[in-house]
Length: 462
Image 1: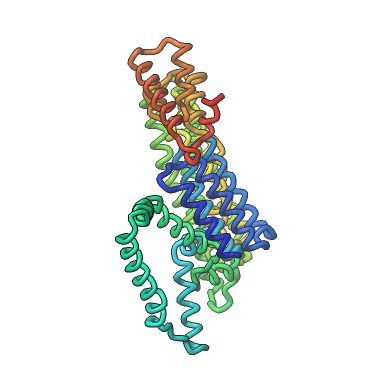
Image 2 (image 1 turned 45 degrees about the vertical axis):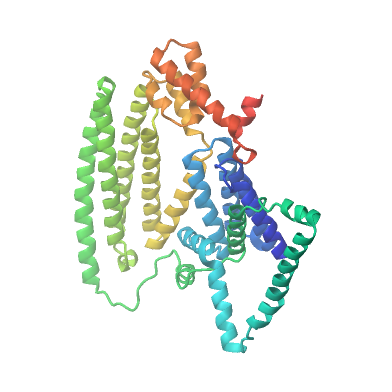
């Protein structure tokens, strides 16, 4: 019964993707994968981690249909590997789930086959296949039947005509190869495996930092390290306070800046922020890597560290204000949205570093939490049609509109641009480009097969 389900799924896979572009087919594949895993493993819905992975994967499947983009397709693929890796071991970290998901999808069948082969060699004497017997059973009758068919064709014109009418062109070898590929893929994902010893090691490693009792560190050495940390943190706090004062004073001038000047301010500020945040987290990880966390007289160092984290968050906020001012004056672009995402990620990194120090967590806690949060941000980002948001905001709110940039965005902007040129005075060359974009997109939608359908297909039908 299980093999029949896999075979049906494989035929559906080939039907969905053979000679088809991405569209509704990827959304249906998402549903098919979830249903297949649920049939294979009913315990899948009994833990929070698997439920989260299922919901995330399902969301990306919907967004691919609603507004197909590179972001939604990439997110769907990552969510697929996360779900498959989570089925193999839901307690593992998300980056280990990615590894297990990729490993399962590619080599699960081979791995299970060779494992079973090794078990057979160890425990059971392998039964030899009589290839000569099977060659006789299949080969001899087939050969004799072909000989008699040729004899009957020569003796009966009507029989010969019927044989000639038999058409095997309906057999599509490429389509059948897609079926085999689908069967292989579905077999793999319904038989998840783990990369060892990576998975078991990851599950065994906890988030809390433990005192190293095996290594004897003198109190004097800890005091010296604490004093070094205090001097360094005092110096860094003084420096960042001075930087913040000058940056806040500089904020009053951004309204009078040209686009090129404001762009330079934002991008140089972000580049500096990338390096400073990485360096800040590295320094904090160095001082709070071991037994200094458990040293009784480390309160001053912790307080100075918390102040430094707060001041770094202040730098993030000021950079965000500059970027928002840039957006208000000159509109949205993917780079400016990317800056906001990076600033969000920086803030989260600093906050998790604060928790690491205050709750005495280890490096693995930081890696796990920040990777999980990054994955959640990726999933949430797919729920927004960014091209449409950019076009709508720039055409209705921004002080300056770069129509050339909007035209070069994906087809998700097509209908908004068409409405805009019909209701506003626009350069004739831009009108021509937008009309061409609109015409080509409508043509693409009309040529879409049912597998390639997207939400806009339903809109043009209405």
